[in-house]
Amino acid sequence: MVRFGLFGTGHWAAETHAAALHAHPGVAFAGVWGRDPRKAAALAERYGVPAFDDADALIDACDAVAVALPPDVQAGIAVRAATAGRHLLLDKPLALTVADADRVVDAAQAAGVASVVFFTGRYRPDVAAFLASTAAVGGWHTARALWFASIFHPGSPYGASSWRREHGALWDIGPHALSLVLPVLGRVTRVAAMDGPNGLVNLLLTHDGGATSTVSLTLDGPQEAVAREFVFYGENGVETAPAGQGDAATALGVAIDQLLEEIGSGTRDHRCDVRFGREVVAVLAAAETARAEGRTVDLAG
Image (cartoon, rainbow, N blue to C red; front, side):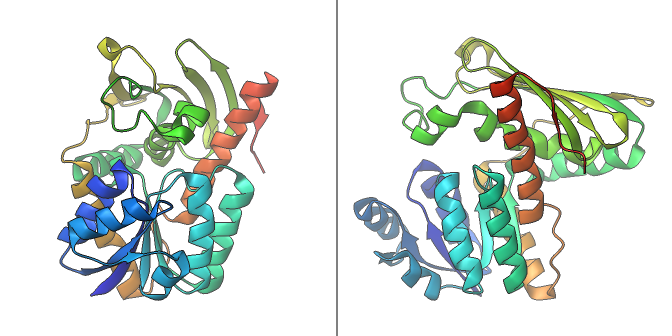
């Protein structure tokens, strides 16, 4: 049994992370820490585990951390946990700056800990199988990714999320989109970006080998226009990614399985580890620059 400490008390922490940790047969749920001690106590009581007032005390009490906090807060917790020799189950995006992402990667590599970043679709078996088979075929010229969400309507569990309101779709659902496009088309070398109405951001990406992709994202679209679609075009025709079966907690259970495999085997080469998380952050940061300065940003080299 691997002891996991949960950092975070919001809706995602409670309904996805805590539920998955509580249900997993290979996990000993060691406790909860949050920035609001009252919420931490309530969530801990719900799952019958201790609440911790001090983050480092929970790090000391576990073998691995599961983090469901805003990305700027997550980065600091991840560095402290890795430095203490704790394995990492982190959320996307890894951080809000490349410098902070580098700090997490450096700490994880220096300590030799295993890491997994939870890009939800990558842990849904039908999506993972599609990406593997599509990447293996090769010959893809372009992809079109569209993700119109609507999370700020009354009753949404994410409507009060201050970091999502501040950083928008680029940093919230952008990591999910990139996590599906990059395995097929390869690393991003150039980024251009343009804003649209209702928080819409449009990316034009160039990938290794010359393939291109377009990514259109919003968190504040009309509820009637909510949609998600990933389509790849190339020498072998057109392929559309499946929507993904199962809920988020089930997908997180798969991520926990894979992290436990890394811990048990001693390997440190997971396809969605903190190094891949850092790669995604670099693309998002480049897109932020491209939006602000109205120019194409080159990531090559």
